[in-house]
Amino acid sequence: MNVNPTSNSRNNPAAERVNRLLDSSYPLCRDDVIWLLEFIKKKVADADPKLMDLSQPHLLKTFHSFAEASMSLIQRKSGDHEVDRLRRWLKDAVEGVSSPLH
Image 1 (cartoon, rainbow, N blue to C red):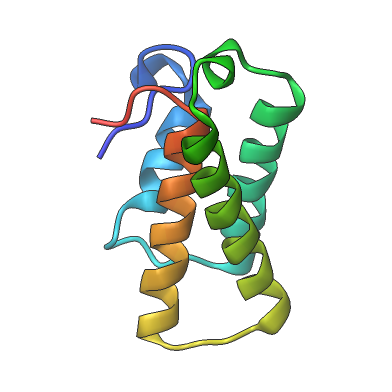
Image 2: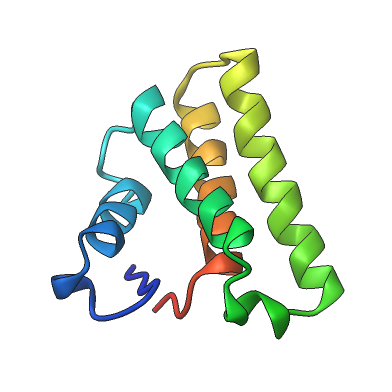
C-alpha cells in the first residue's frame, strides 16, 4: 500500500513513514500511532484542498476512524486483534486526508 500525501513517496519521508506504519508486517508502537494521528491532524488543520472535495459521509467515516484510533490509545487495549483494528482505523483515516492510496 502506498500513500502519497504530497508527492512521490521516494522523495517524501512522511509518505514513506506512513506506508511503513500501515504495513501489516510492521510492529506498531505507541509513538508511531501518535505520529500518524498528528500527521492526520495537521492535514486537517492545514485545510488540505483534497479534503474540500470529500463528501460528508466520507468525512464522517474519516473522523470516526481517527476518533477510534485515538480512543484505542487512551484505553490501552492490547492483542493482535486490537492492533489489526487500530491499523484499519489508521488506514481509513489516512485515506480520508491523503491521496491517493494505491
